Image (cartoon, rainbow, N blue to C red):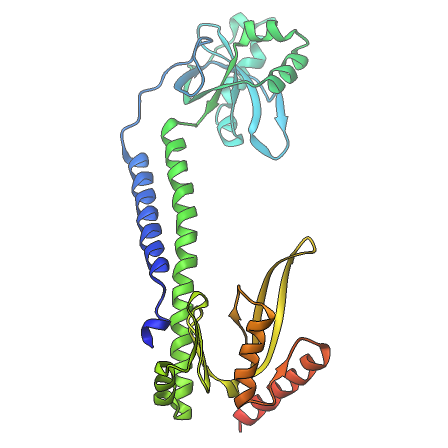
Length: 332
């Protein structure tokens, strides 16, 4: 009988598979974070997308294009020591640290620009990214120039400060680790829940002195079995292998059908059991038809003729009253 309540082989296999995948993702992320990164190359107008680059910033404007609430969408213009102009993406902290270059930018457009004491360039590293059509159009409108004139002056790519190919690769591994880890957690919780329910059921039967009887009836050839549902019905007990419950029929106070719908269309039918302690459990989540429901109801009613059958407001009211009475009696 313990084999009947053990997690299915498929569930155990998936547990191992997702544990292995999660571990691989964590190892991959660790490797990406610790392996030596490539050396950045100088940013030019010919630099292509997804290239790890550096930019020596001499002049830096205040923001020229900003999407509220999205720091990755705040663009500035910057000039390197060779008077090449670029569009750069900076977050607020990076921009705040470059105040001397902002002052130099403002001085550059005054009459005394030749006498200004310009700071030494600050080297930033990041990734070259392609400016898409919408961003380029918006920036060209800001400068009141044509699309082609903008690209000729600034190039087709922008400098994304702080980004790196390593962090992008590590991010993919981290996303994989989180995804597989969540699936692993769901499977582990399902297995843990099954074992917890079985232990509680075993303790309940032991307290009632029915442990041996439940084991004997499980082996009885007369016991009805539904292998695909992991469900068995003996003369006095219901064995629910999918969730770990082993219950005497006297604990089943209410049987009813629950239809799950999506956009008003039925997609699944469950046979639910309301227990005397107030819990509602699923006896079967598929292959639930009228013949099956009648079969289960007959088994339960044979030992518990007061069991409520079918969903109605009256049955729900009576069920809640029985639960209150059971709990009141249990506390005495």
